[in-house]
Length: 126
Image (cartoon, rainbow, N blue to C red; front, side, top):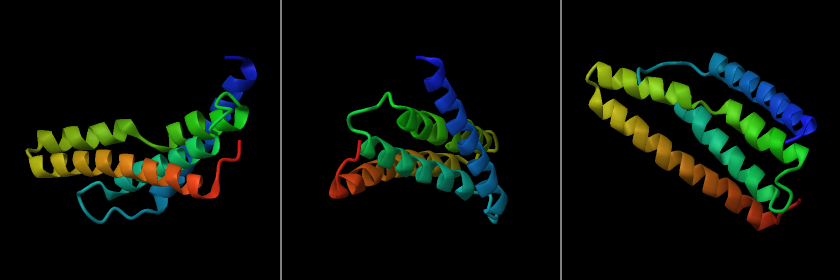
């Protein structure tokens, strides 16, 4: 990996982290269940599906690295996902833990496939 590729991932990551922060600032936390984290991770999975669908050939290009590994990687949040599940288990809210885990994994996989499939309907670009 060269310095341009690393810079692309870094730039995309900075934008993704800022976008996550901004979205978390505007999403109201109205329940104990972590909807805000679920929305972030599912939308990030859909975005990654779109990126992967668009870049079927050149996956070492700067735009792919910035958008996929950088933006989507920093926008989604595995650490918050893990903390929410661990907190639910610690407080013996097992249904919340299992439902959040299930919704996150199934929702994320489905969103990724939907994003990728949507691009196939239009056709790959790069």
